[in-house]
Image (cartoon, rainbow, N blue to C red; front, side):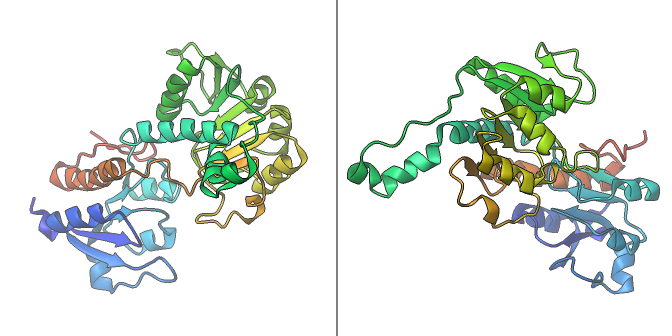
Length: 321
């Protein structure tokens, strides 16, 4: 098939490597953002057969693309796409798993250490001249030594996190909907049961209706005053007002966040707290990893329009043999 004749829509911002590679293979149509109506004439809407997406795609826009066949999503999470709508229309949705597993797992461990040992605050103590002027930085009140870690979501990335934790000699448990038979980590049948037994909770779950604000007052209270919460999954899984209160009143000891309920965020309620470490959603944000993600977005589109095969479809829209 001559792919130059296939029109691919890019709504909003996406990694520049995606645009560059798409332009080599497809007729690329871009729109600046998704505010309001789809700003394309009827003829162009009819020509669009693929979408390369980073973020959210309005369901209303999908309905206005009558010949859309595939939505190729930049990111392992794809909660910005209505997969039920796509499945009903026979539209394939793909994402970019595996290529970012290591990077996200590495970041989770780094964020955990930063949170427990307050390393960014200690570095700032040096950079601001306070070490020379005021003396040694205060001892960190927490340590990773002897901790019991519960991982919420033991999928591809969760498993990588668990394997990285093993050399730290901590106890490792997990909660998922279904117990795994290929690991020896302690399985907990519910999130609350796990929170009651561990003192460190790492969340790496997707953003779905079922996981919305699943980290709530009950879970944080169960985690306890020595508890540490780390989130490298989705910000929508956390009740942020409750988390802020828990950090202020000592319900838990500390938290580390790479994701937030609304992004980008000013994180106003957390800025004056010294028991939280925050990152601007950078877990997969290295040049090599983001390039690999960009390539997978394009390769899924090429595969589909070459021979109706994709590398990484989401389970809600499987490719029929």
